[in-house]
Each structure stands twice: as structure tokens, then as C-alpha cells.
Image (cartoon, rainbow, N blue to C red; front, side, top):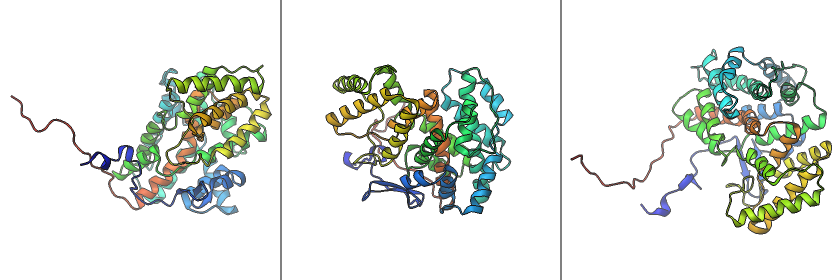
Length: 379
């Protein structure tokens, strides 16, 4: 087989149909069930978007009321899950905590071995409702803080922030967080979603597929990039007394040196988008509001300097992780918690694909071209 016939990384290979999402190349827009994600982020709650991903249509008023009631009823941290989390060292990455919690929740679910459409929908909602408590508690325990119980009078995003920080956030912060959850919710056959579909294709259960997807998302070439962006900012140095222009100048110099040394700088480029990630303008607008709210122009300077230097040198645009990282930093999340936030959001997309895979399943089993020694025998 010729080398050009090998599709490393499955680049350009179309393996199945999906009705969950697509990138519209004509408008460079990401569509969830046909809706441009920037419109969803501007007009919808994350609960409405989750309903859309799982059901194919946005909910009406009564459907949304029933749906949100189901989510709010499942927010409390399972005491057994808390006990398991407490046994994990705080040196473990928070993604390890998410992966372990998803597995424990699956093993304890009353419908663990039931993969009917009704059971999978219930498991998807239950897991989506439960994960914020896991992410919030893990950050709090690392700071020596106790669990904050959920509040049923707050929406998903406001409650997530409440459980993490123990105080209600202003509407501007809640809205920025809601936008990030919507933008991270789904993105077709990315590495973690494809992992979930591969596991599902073996007829494994929903929680097994999500647990595997979390493992795939942990890598810095996928979900871990939002953490790496903040590590870059830290390496350059965040100086609160610095002006926007001063920070931009230092960041530009740093990027020029990094590129000259052929260092890989995370947060830029995307395999699907050739003209820039369509989600970035919406997330950047949210970041701008957070920078204004917290009075942190030096972060915008670092952002602009890196972006400008990368564009001038490589003509490579930022991806969603680039504005998301500093946005989460401003809200008060620890850097290691950024990818778990991605998990909490992407559970909706993963499980939509899991249910789609189950509905029209075929075992995913690609071939390989052998390039090892020819047949030989033990002397």
C-alpha cells in the first residue's frame, strides 16, 4: 500500500453520518442541529442547548420546565462519589477525578446495563447534572474547603459557579460562563467524541464511553489546550500593574522567541477550521466583558500580543481554548480545572453521539498496514 493511502490520524476520512452538528464551510459557522452556535450562545441557556442536542429541537416552555426540573434534582454530590474523590491524592490531575467519578456514577446507576433509548437519556441527564458537583468539589477540596450544596433556584451555570465559589456571581459572570458551556458542548467527530462512539460501537454502556472520552479529552492536543494557554500566560508573566500595550509588547516578544525555537504554542490552529475557529469571536466577546468587569487590561495585552505575533509569523488563528482559558482564570477557576469544565459541557455532545451511535450501530474497527518484520520463526 502506498504511503499516501495511509490516512494518519484518520485525517479527511469520513466514517459515518451524524445529525448532531456540522461546520458550515460557506459561513465558517458551527451548527448544532442546524442552529449556528453563536445564535444559541446569544439567545439560549445551556439547558436549552442540552435539550436541543439530545432531542433535535429546542424545547417549548413546558418541555424546558420539565427538563430543568430533572437536571436540578440530580445536582447533589453523591456521598459515595465524594468518598472516592477524597481517596484520590490532590497531586492527581482533576481530569483523573472526573474520569473516576464518571466510572463510579456509572457503576452505581440503577440502569447501568440498560442501553435502551429511555435508559440512555436518563443516564445522560443524570451524568450531566452530577458532574458540576464533582468539578466544583475537587477544586474546593484542593483549597481545603468543604462541599457547597446545590441550589435549585439557580440555573445550571449560576449553580455551577455557586457550588465552586460558595457565593452568587453577578449576571455578567454567569452569562460568560453560560456562553462557554454552550460553545464547548459539541463539535462533531473530534478525538474524544470519536472515542466515545468507538466504545459505544462495541455495545459498551454509556458511562464506559464517557469515561473513555474523558481520557481522550485530557490530552493537550485536545481539551487540555485551555490549560496550556494559561500556562503560557504564566510563563510570560502576568503583571497586574502593567498597561495593555506593555503586556502586548512582552507577549509578542515571547511568541517570536518561541516560534524561533520551534516550540509548539497551544491555543492556535484547528484541523477543521481553515479560516479561524468560528466559536472564537463569541468567546472573545465574553472574555472582553470579563476583562472589563474585573479591571484586568494586562490580560488583554498578553492575549493581543500573542495573537498578533502568531498571525504575522504563521497566519494561524486562535481556537476556542485561547479565549476560554483566561476567561476561566478571571472567574477564579484553578488552571487545572479548565479541562474538567470542558468535560461538564461536552457531556451533552458526547452523549448525543452515543445515543446516535446506538440507534444505527456498526462496530468501528479500522484496518492497519503492517510494516514490521516478515514472518520468522523461533529457533
